[in-house]
Length: 205
Image (cartoon, rainbow, N blue to C red):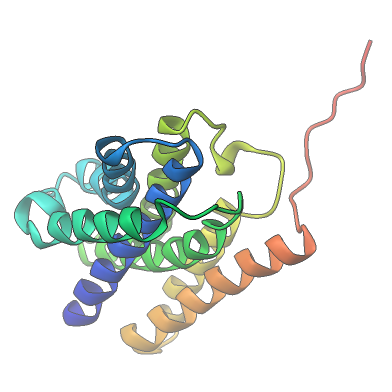
């Protein structure tokens, strides 16, 4: 399981760095600006998770994560720098990164002996905080705060599914794959069919 978490974490870092640079491209940022957005997107959620769990920050312990984030950001920057970017291009890789990071964060919290509810929220934090930092650095309202398709809810559903599946005896690896699939499927369905939560609409005086 540890090996799977490690490699899934590296892929998640690369995918989120890509989404950060794609979003920075819409703002016509230079190389340094785009890389900063990409690295913040890739490493932000896991950093907050580790600080809350009082564990060593993952990319400080193993700089491979930082190298992957920088490399993915550089490759993406030069691959798209002279191409027109559709405004929603980053949403598909963002959904993939959300699924990967949510499950990694949940499993790490469980291995750190966090209670189940805390572990599920650590998964959500790992999945969404990088995107929040990306949107703030790009001067946008974060996706998770907008009235729109399910985002954090999809992450939470996947995290809780992983925990429940492990509790009923499914292997950690199988639970992780199912949890990732649930997050990704819910997010993609929400984007396709505009699935949303109820909103607070107080009557106007």
